[in-house]
Structure formats: structure tokens, C-alpha cells
Image (cartoon, rainbow, N blue to C red; front, side):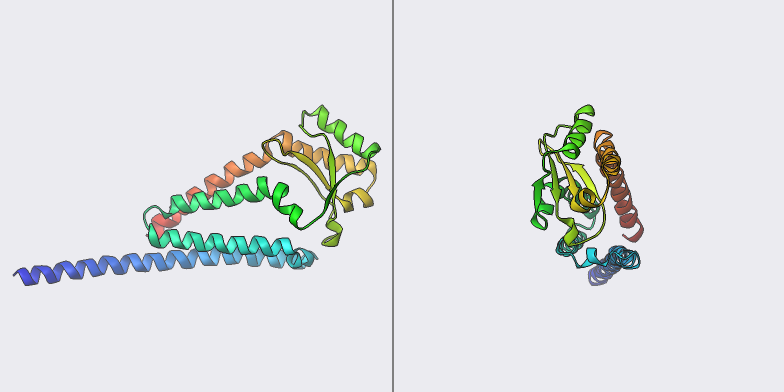
Length: 220
């Protein structure tokens, strides 16, 4: 009888381990398909829209590498903490978003482009005047050589803890008129003043946490 009891216990344990391993396998496959699919869709869209230069740019390769490391980290959490991986995975994913949106423009983007102050003149004074009128804490305007990688016209106003800055790419500065520059900068200053970046981070935080919880409970 003791021998029979021990055999039944081992069989139950093996069955539970098999179920857990199967759930873990499907979970990893789902995350792989989702993330690789996201990269694939982004690549196809960039190609069809004539933005192949973004894919070839060194900065894009860096973010793909970082994203791959992020995926590997989430896999590690799934294997080592099957009950709480969703929480640790959420922390890692949210930290990645913060780096991309808040820290990247200040410390990472300058690794791939040269940033210089916009020469003194009407354009610089006009942009600074708009910033002062909206209480944006900046005292200079910078231009970076994005034309090496793209023909896209863009600008951004970003930074945290005293690093806020206004950055225009050289396509905007050299290929558009002063009224067009003011229009673009009004749009970008509006994002900063209305805290759209932080609202986006909060929204994606909720999506990530709820999504990971759903996946965990569905494929556990």
C-alpha cells in the first residue's frame, strides 16, 4: 500500500509538471509571435512608405538589439518565476518605454547624430519666444543632422530633470519656411505642455500589465 501511494503521488506530480511546461511553452511562443510580428509589420510599413533608411540607420539596429534583450529577459522571468513573471516583465517593459521616450532623446540619440545650437536669428528667437509663452524651461534651440539618414521633417521637445530641450532636424530648418517651422514647433510644444508623453506612458503601462496578466492566466 505505501508503495502504491508513492507511485500515485509521483504520477500526479509529473502530470502537473507536464501541464506547467506546456503552458510555459505556449506562452513563450505567443510572446515570440507577437514581438516578431510587431517588428515585421514595422519593417514592412517602413519599406512600403519609402522609409527604408530608418531600417538601415544604426539607431534602429540598437533599438532592435535592446528589444531582443528585453524579450530574452521576459523569457527568463517566465522560467524562473512562473507565478509572478507578469509583474517583473511589466517592470522591464515599462522601463524600456521610459528609456526610449524620456532618456533616449537626451542621451542616446546624440550618439548617432550631431547636435548644434541653431544660429542666432529670427527663427531661433521665434521658437524661444513660443517656449517662454508656454512656460517651457529651455534657453536654447538645437539642430541635428538627420538628413544623413532621412528626408523626414521633424522636431521634438523632450527631457526630464532639467534636461528639457528643443530639437529641430536640419530638414525642417533648411527645407521649410519660417511659418511652417512655427507650425511644427507649436505642435511639439503642445505635446510637452500637455504632458502627452506621460499620458502615453500611463496608457501603455496599463495595456502591458493587463495584457501580461491576461496571457499569464490564459496560458498558465
